[in-house]
Image (cartoon, rainbow, N blue to C red):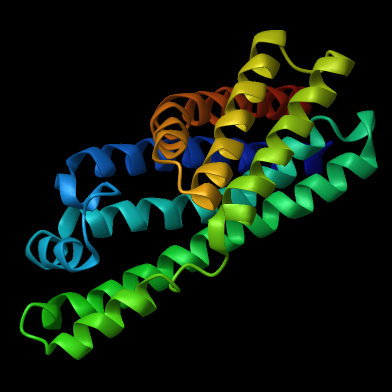
Amino acid sequence: MQTDAAIAKTGSVAAFGVALAYLASSICAVLMPPELQGRPDVSPHQFWMVLAAHPLAHLAFHWSWVAAGIFGLGAVPAISLLVWSANPGAVLWSGAGAFCGFAVLARSHLMEVAFDRRIIPQYRQAEPAFQQAVHVVAGLALDVPDGFLTYGAIGVWVVTVSWLARRGASLPRPLCLLGYLTGVTYLAGVLGYTFLVHGLLVVSFGLGGFLLAPMWYGWLGFVLRARAARSDTS
């Protein structure tokens, strides 16, 4: 029971961390100049010129995603154990996908930060050939295209956990329904990236990242903290 309590305590802190990191990323996105907010009418050159002049919120945005990825590595095992007995196979494979998704999330945004910090001081004074190369390479900075792991795999895991918890009544019904909605916003991000649908990305970032995902992970943080307290007293 002491081991269960330790996992739940660590998972609680990690779940709260994911919630706060998602919320921070959304706030940073709002604070960025409009040209840096993923508008389809902004050219790559215009994006980088504005970024070179106003980099702070953009870099903070990436650091928020790095934090979300790192905290996610601690949250996935603890949250998965809440529904493990319902279907170990489904929990194992969906959890493995989510674990990879959070790991890629952290690594990808660390790469973005490293790339941006090298390019920002040089971009405005650089030759056109250098600027054109930046436009090409910048699109490759994130490892996995279209968010298949960072949105898709994590979204599948969120829906799986919610479905198993709903079926086994191991978590409150409103929390399970919130999980379904959160998973849908994750998957909306995949479709938005894949088919370049700006509206779906707005749903994923705005509704999912700013509201639903922080609520889901935060609520689970309280659930895990309560489980840890019960384990300590048993």
